[in-house]
Image (cartoon, rainbow, N blue to C red; front, side):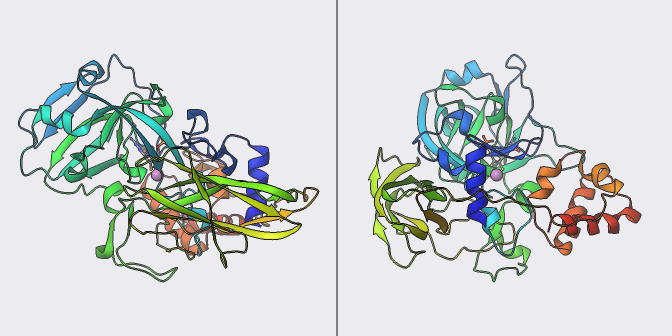
Amino acid sequence: MAAGAAAFLSRTLPSATILSPSPKDVEMPVGEFIDEITPVEHFFVRCHTLIPEVKLGDWKLEIAGLVEKPITLTLDDLKKLPRVEMESVLECAGNGRSFYQPRVAGAQWRFGSVGNARWTGVRLRDVLKRAGLKPEATQLLMDGADVPMGTMPKFQRTLEVKKALDPDTMLAWEMNGRPLTPDHGFPLRVIAPGWASDSWVKWLTRIDAMDHEFDGFWMKTAYRHPNHHVEPGSTVDAKDMIPVTDLNVKSVIATPDAWAKPGLITVQGVAWSNASPVTRVELSADGGKTWSATKLEGRATKYGFRKWSYGWKAVEGQYTLMSKATNAAGQAQPQEPEWNPNGYLYNAAQPRPIAIAATAPPIPTTHDAEAPAEPQSYKAGCFACHDDNMMRQQHLTRAQWDREVTKMTNWGAQVKPEQRNELLDYLSARFR
Ligand SMILES: Nc1nc2c(c(=O)[nH]1)N[C@H]1C(S)=C(S)[C@@H](COP(=O)(O)O)O[C@H]1N2
Ligand SMILES: [Mo]
């Protein structure tokens, strides 16, 4: 079922799958996972807000808080510091969320909220040196030019000073040799290599040195996962929820997808990891019972995509392909996903059903669930910030929709108390 839908999406939308047109959430279909460097036009986009139109002439970066000397820098000032270039994977913490069972609310990413780019900019520690961090500074509050929608809290995140001073952590103005596009944070963004991209703040305008972690929504509630194994579907004590930092080792099969003709097939894709590079990628054609080593190809970089391929002599039949990467630290992709309440850091070796046959199987069609007539509160309440796409991907229970509606009304969605029940009936009947 899921693989059929994937095949459908990658055959009809060659370069991008739109999860939400506005705020812009776009993912890269699996077929594009063949380049070591992801072209900007295929690169996923994740925004919690509308994309701000920043004019370079008005833009500046302020550094304040627990510093010896607060400073303001223009892009030209930054360009006078030693220039660095580095390749690094950028992956959303929620990548793969749609595969968790039970379902978890949020953008239903499949494989593609990840890409690898070459970033040009300066070391964050060289910039901080200009202002002089006070010894008590432990966290940096990163603020961008984006403006929240409704009454949702501003996207602000603290980055640990320890990570900020790592020589690999950067502020970048170029992506693949071109100025950042507005989608990706023009004119300046944080590069926190090896960490999930919630720490890669876009449209950066201000850094405040602090002696504690920021307690706003995007730090205190979002981007946290349990510090221990939890049973799928269970709730977790807030004190056991820790910030998402390091990425998990992971791989994707780019081709073949869903169907191929019998014969010698090159199975290929990419793998990536955290600060510990990928050392091995294995492939299974029998759903994870037996594994064979694939060939690592291309360049080995600390934080980038590593290409791999495998020559598979395939005869007619139905198979389940899986790829599994291991890094230098010995971390490997598990066969069972590590379920967590916010659906972060999915890295299970994902089963990919494939038909080996002389002709292509028919493309499956999907139908909406039977739903009651649309209540007025649906468009009035949800469409100020979303459209059908965002709701359609969710598949939530009534209790989960209840929590989402509470979150959204707290952020300014206009749903009258007397409309709440009919809205919940509608959402849970149509988008279950
Ligand atoms: N200012 C700001 N920075 C942000 C975000 C945002 O909404 N606002 N989204 C974050 C998240 S959750 C992700 S996954 C990445 C996405 O980066 P991209 O759109 O360049 O792929 O940006 C991060 N930086
Ligand atoms: Mo994200």
